[in-house]
Image (cartoon, rainbow, N blue to C red; front, side, top):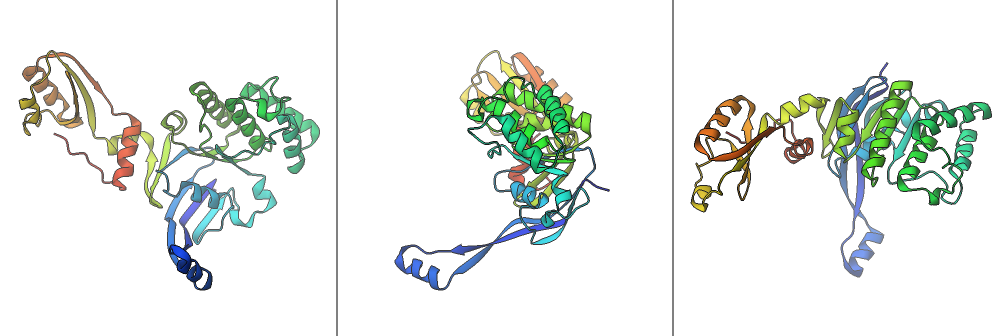
Length: 339
């Protein structure tokens, strides 16, 4: 049985259109007209128990809407969805005990109370016996390095400590499926690393399934072997992260440091760099090329033979850039114009 299963999942919203001015207000009151917004358009995917999957897409792609359908917060307009053996929008008690949703921009802890009090409330909500709740809180406190912090008012905690406490509250009932929407949003680098390490260890210890959205690509590259990419409400990629990089970036990045700046006449010649690859930037004596992997050896030989260089570096393009190109094309057929 899949931990998460979505088949042709859809969500549309009727949005009222209002014209400006008092006449528009009157018409809006008496006879409204609507336009239909397709937030999610027939998305299908399956997630195995224990998988950690990155869920990627630009703002407005439909990620949060999809998460809300998977957690039962909103009813799908079409298609089928099943999570942990349940239909989410039925909101059955057994289902709610098996899932959790953490949103980096939302909080469930009570601001003026110590986090320990909110944890006691959560334990009561989920009918966790007192001895068992103490055991779980102790274990999570150690994993999240929150010793001595739970008795302070939440407002006194740092942002990183609050996020850790939010994770503790969300995981106290030991859910089988975790939906994490920007869990490291706004955190500093050290706090982001701590949250990632905790999630990796939590997945290893419990075998929980994790579906993670994040704009911090380090979250995805360090936690997820598989990624699902949606664009404008449609799924455009589902597979291995390394395969995504190979598929959408069939080129290497070559950084060349020249002994002397190129003359403007050479830079402006349209065919001057064609033998080497596509020029991404020229900054003084530094030139950055994109070269197809299949043509890399020949291009490097020509660069060394033709140009007076001080240094040459070959790297893969940053994964953030690759994902950005995926979003820009909105399809799985991206191929850069290089070489």
